[in-house]
Amino acid sequence: MTSAQIIDGKAFAAVVRQKVAEKVNNLKGAHGITPGLAVVLVGSDPASQVYVRSKGKQTVEAGMNSFEHKLDAETSEDVLLDLIDSLNADPTVHGILVQLPLPSHLDESLVINRIAPEKDVDGFHIANVGLLGTGQKSMVPCTPLGCLLMLRDHHESLSGKNAVVIGRSNIVGKPMAQLLLNDSCTVTIAHSRTVDLPDVVRRADIVVAAVGRPEMVLGDWIKPGATVIDVGINRIDTADGKTKLVGDVDYESCAAVAGAITPVPGGVGPMTIACLLANTLTACCRINNIAEFDELSF
Ligand code: GUN
Image 1 (cartoon, protein in one colour):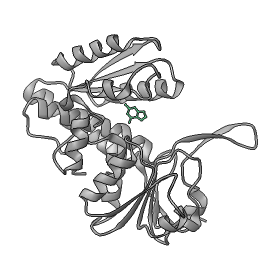
Image 2 (cartoon, rainbow, N blue to C red; image 1 turned 45 degrees about the vertical axis):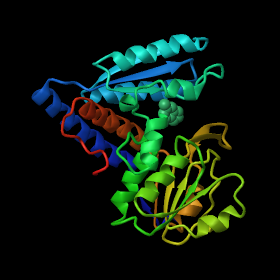
Image 3 (cartoon, rainbow, N blue to C red; image 1 turned 30 degrees about the vertical axis):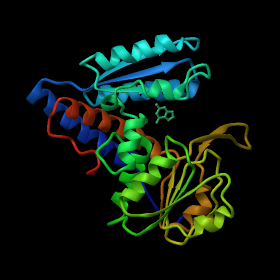
């Protein structure tokens, strides 16, 4: 039995994309500028290929230019760094995203930190991490930004709420915790070594699950009425020999206790790409000194 309100990320993402498209249209009319996003994919990881295709399609639908650079899996670090240098110098490119994970012979930190910080629409460059960590204007990682927008939309205020983020990745867990802290939540970051995780989660008004373990968070871990944001996307085998997508949260049991919950699919996933488009527009406005589209104001 589901009692929780379902937070419809798919519908919310459509609203964000529409606002981005309107602003892009104004930008073209008033300034003759078309925001451009370059996506770099090294190798042929099937999941990454799906994401990159989807990003390209939605970028074009929002009226922006999409530049895709597909490099083979054996590409050397020098060649990849040269490509990033040329994208940094290209005035038609306002956002650069290097799809992760990279093949193991490439140094991810080196590659990410080569991106000009103002074009780092993933918000992974060390300069943006530092700006976010000190509450300054930065590029904000897309998945945590999408989660924050849904939480802000659902709650009048996040101030003083107990938030537990499960997972300490640089892509989701750590920036998510930072964003919640910037919104005056009391934040706990839990991870694989956390002692008595269920008890920690039971104290949370807001739970963000980003561990990559299918259906790990159970209903009896959830404080009644809490808001549950499920960042996980895991493909699992079903009894009838097929596969299905599930989150890091056991949806049925958690939805029976939570006040609100994001579904998988249709929750965080669509918001991530919508936020990437918003970040590309933001980067374009900042680079061109144009009154900014405020991606945090939804
Ligand atoms: N791989 C999985 N998530 C992401 C993301 O948000 N950005 C990039 N660049 N790669 C990813």
